[in-house]
Image (tube, rainbow, N blue to C red; front, top):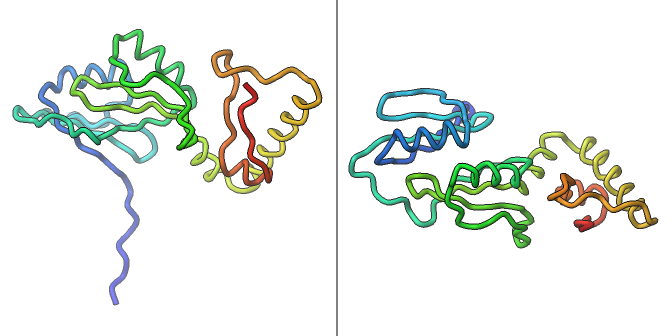
Length: 184
């Protein structure tokens, strides 16, 4: 009988680039993750928690695979898209609800041609799981009360573009015993 090894402490995804300088400029100046390690031909960025992404310069780096997507989770997809647009980043898909997956997202291309997704749907669900059942229930009750207030004629919640929330996570919906949807 063998003992299980210790837990995995970190995760790093490495991608090839033909131009580390352009890649570094995009990720450091525009996206902004902290440079965790500069290894000369490779640069490793701290994305969040224990997640990292590294880029290594290779003269013969192949074109990015069509199915590869780097997904970044944020609370404000629209603000990130404004920032990316201001820097002239190429958009593959404008921000929109992606109802089959219950997310709100956009896709852009980095200087290497890698597809980068800016998403908020999954993040809320993961945060709710980290908060635990009690916090989810408190949130669900507050949302349900807000929904009841709207039904009784009180002002509608702000739309996303006005700075309002647009969804309630699936765990919170389950805790409230209902399917809560956008008021807009």
